[in-house]
Amino acid sequence: MILSDKRILEEMDKGTIVIKPYTRTCLGSNSYDVHLGGNLATYDSDELDAKKHNTISHFQIPDEGFVLQPDTLYLGVTEEYTETHAHVPFLEGKSSTGRLGIDIHATAGKGDVGFCGNWTLEISVKKPVRVYKGMPIGQLIYFPVEGEIEVKYNQKSNAKYSGQPNRPVESMMWKNSF
Image (tube, rainbow, N blue to C red; front, side, top):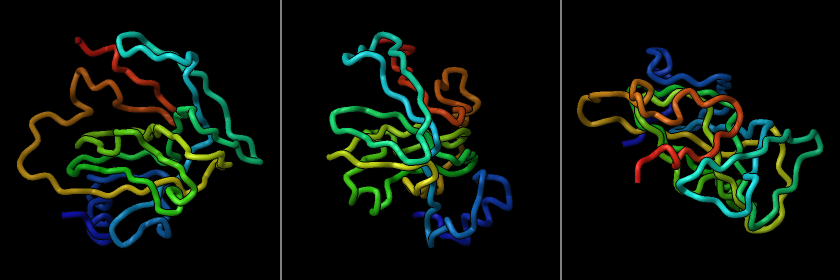
């Protein structure tokens, strides 16, 4: 079951869903549109290693936009800071974004109950496409949780992405034991 617009508003009134900035016109019948923040990043190395800390370089999207290129992984970020304390948030691309050949996440579309932060986007494109700060990039949908949560994500000592800032965050896979 996905929360409707009325239920999202009710949860926002209760403080179990937080969206900042919030604009009423971005609320759909069962989703909330999120926008591309002004900061992108790329990995510094062409070869990534899952056991090592792979560093990234940040850059701002200029007013005239920035052309994303195929075969490059870009890390982006949502303008919106969100908190979800009683539901499972899912971030999906908008159909208009997909029709431009833009994928906004490789595998990380699901958040956890207790996620607090801006969403890092794993952006790839099928062909060159110019993107702009503030353009609609995705939509959040919320699912109710069956059962009680023992430990929310933002309360876990090993939560690698809790409190993400308004700039992209690189993979923290290297912090895992394997």
